[in-house]
Length: 120
Image 1 (cartoon, one colour):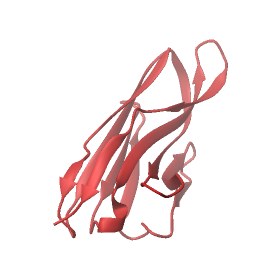
Image 2: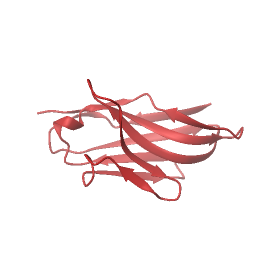
Image 3: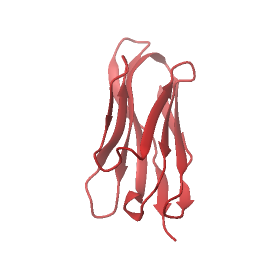
C-alpha cells in the first residue's frame, strides 16, 4: 500500500506565495518521478511541474519563473514553491508519483488534492 499525502494549500492574495508538500509512504522500493498537476473548474487537468529521478525537471509554460519544484529523497517528499500567484492559478493541485513497490511493480499514484485559491 502506497499513499501520497499533500499539504500546504489555502487562500492567498494575488502576488502572494504558497508552498505545497507531498509525502509518499508505504511499500516503496523506489520513487521514479514526482510531480504536480492542477485542475481548475471548466478546464482540463494540466501538468504543473515534474521532477524525474536523475534530475530532469519540466514546468508548464504558465508557471515558469514563478514556481519551483524540489524533492527530498530521504523524506520521500516533493515540494512546490509557488510565488507571484495569480487568480488563474486557482485550482485543486494533485501530487502524483511513479513508484516501484517492494513487490517489484511500478504504478502511478495520486494524492487526494489540495485547494489553492488566489483571490483578493
